[in-house]
Every structure is written in C-alpha cells, then in structure tokens.
Length: 278
Ligand SMILES: [Zn+2]
Image (cartoon, rainbow, N blue to C red; front, side):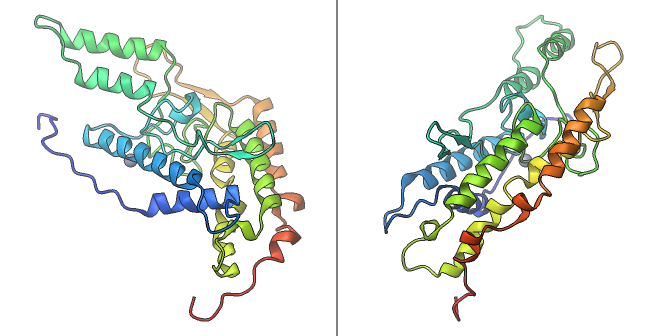
C-alpha cells in the first residue's frame, strides 16, 4: 500500500439540511403570514456548503478533528453545531451559523499531507518542521473515537459543540433556548399547517443544549491529553482543575432545575393531538 488515494466519492443526503431548517423554524418563529423568510434557507445552505467541504476533506484522507470547535471553528472536519447569537435587541441571530471556507487546522493538515516540496528538499525533515510549527501554534486535535463516547476523558473532544469554554457556551445556549421558548407561538408553523406539527419544531429547541451538556460533562473527572510523541514538547495528560470540575457540576445541575425542564404553559397550550391522516 502506498497510501495514495485513487478515488474518493461522497453522497450528500438531505437529512442534515432538513434538520437545520427545522432548528431555524424553532429559533426564529418566522411565519407572520404565507411568506417564507430567507433566513432558514440561508442557514440550511450554509450548512450544506460546510458539509460539502467536510466530505471533500474525507476524500483527501482527512479525519475528524472534534476539538477544532474549541479554537474558533478551526476545521471543517469537526461536527458543527450552528453558532447562534443573540443580537442587541435580544433576538436570535443565525447569520453566522456556519463558517465559510476551511479553517486554520485544515490548512495545516493539507500543508503537511500535500505540500509540493522543491526538488532536493529533505521531505521528512520538512514535514517534521510543519508538524513542530503546528504544535507550537497551539492547534489541538482529538479524533473521532476519542470524542464520540460520552465517557471519553478529553473535554476538548466533542461532537456538535461550540466555543473555547464549554461551560460559557452551555449558559449561552440556555439563554437562546429561553428566548425561543418564550417566543414559541403559532408563528413557528406556516398558515394552514396542523398546529400539532409544532411538536416537531419544539423538540430540537427543547433539546438545544443536549450536545453542549456532554461537552461540559467531560470536564468532570476529565483529562486534557495529546497524541504526543516523545520529544515533541506536548503535555501528555493534565487533569482538569478541581475548580473547573466544580463549575461544570454547577452548570449541569442548572440544566436539571424545574425552570429549565418545564415546558412553558404558552407552549403546552398551543399543541393539540394530530389530526387524523396527517
Ligand atoms: Zn465526516
């Protein structure tokens, strides 16, 4: 085996886009009338652009880096949660839900794996230098199998999370969720649609913080570690500080309070059983 990739082929389905559209409908309560505002479709298309870059990354042999979202969306090879902002008027803003283009980590990976070195270059030494520079610049990398289990130890490695500080992001998402729940109304579905269908719009909003909860949980008993090689200068493994672990416990307990768990009366009153045949 030479390690060369002869062909890569990827098929993109519509599932992710549909899910994003649903999240946007839930967050924005967008339907004054028959008109469909552009924001939902724009967010969905931004997602599929990002996903396309991700899949092209795989065809080039690049693995997931589930830690990249802790460094400002440094890689298209992470699993991205939409970045949801609250604007100055207290409204949910999805205009920066997904990053455009590739990230700083992706550039380092391509530089290492696909650099065309001039003739006469000691390629191994040149690649070692690229790796050393990458480590010096502070890039972090946690691969898929070390991130996917809820029980995995490294708090940097998470799917569908955001932010350099997982606890701050959880608190932010709870604020976004509270705004969306407060605004939840008939405007979350189009005129003429069954009101019962609002339950489908509600679910991803009610569970909006579920992945960030996992990211915060990994601080508890967690270790920040690296795939260090002897002599490369990286710290092998460092326990999460006791203070940080206590903050994580407090943040998680907040998600279990009645104020967070309860479905508000205004929402309950909106959703009847489904009409027959729908
Ligand atoms: Zn992937």
